[in-house]
Image 1 (cartoon, rainbow, N blue to C red):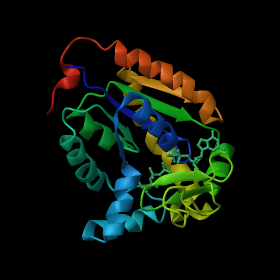
Image 2 (image 1 turned 30 degrees about the vertical axis):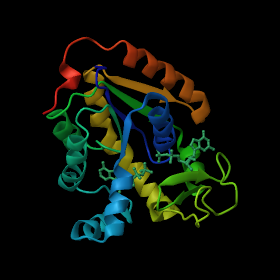
Image 3 (image 1 turned 90 degrees about the vertical axis):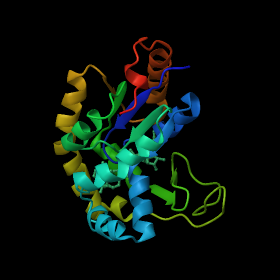
Image 4 (image 1 turned 60 degrees about the vertical axis):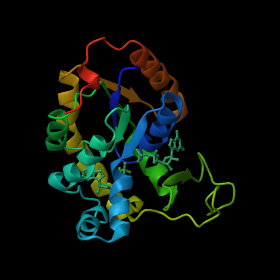
Length: 226
Ligand SMILES: Nc1nc2c(ncn2[C@@H]2O[C@H](COP(=O)(O)OP(=O)(O)O)[C@@H](O)[C@H]2O)c(=O)[nH]1
Ligand SMILES: Nc1ncnc2c1ncn2[C@@H]1O[C@H](COP(=O)(O)OP(=O)(O)O)[C@@H](O)[C@H]1O
């Protein structure tokens, strides 16, 4: 049986995590888990948890760690026996420690994208809320303006991509990500990529993953479940 592979992608809002994750999932068959997507689903379900989550997300603030781990760790449990890629989780050191106590990651991708690029991209980001499909009016526009390619339904902008929330999110990201990045660096699994264009970064990530997934050590570490 092929070895299981567990990876995470980190980077500020707008750095291309979702775009790159989609390519990774398609090319390498990893299951893709996006914290933002699960949070938005929780908000849409209007549960007690969703109402609480909304108060943070709409202000561009991080959702508390215990809420995030309670949301994400059971999803990973359901995926035992699959290779996966986490996007947006862990975001804080406490989340990374909680994850680490259950699973050893094989690889963490960190995206370093200049601030001006992030701002420009997010002000142009539109999504189809039901599916999570993401568009950018310059980079990957929908075929019909303002409409989802598959369903034809209207596209919307996240409240947290609007300028007021955006600044707070970017500032927060930097402070909080540093110890997480340091942790993965110390574990020797961090790989950082810099640039302003996803299409130029992608070939490097593609070859890194090709390399890592085909040359995994033959111990059983990755295939153990908690
Ligand atoms: N102009 C441009 N836009 C991009 C590029 N890569 C991604 N995007 C767009 O930038 C926005 C943010 O990307 P996304 O993958 O959602 O980033 P995330 O917030 O890190 O998950 C989306 O609208 C993407 O379509 C790129 O290389 N150039
Ligand atoms: N791991 C996390 N911990 C705390 N809050 C989170 C986490 N992931 C997502 N969020 C919340 O959800 C919002 C949207 O997240 P996401 O869709 O990943 O967007 P982006 O990558 O554009 O920041 C964040 O601004 C934050 O409020």
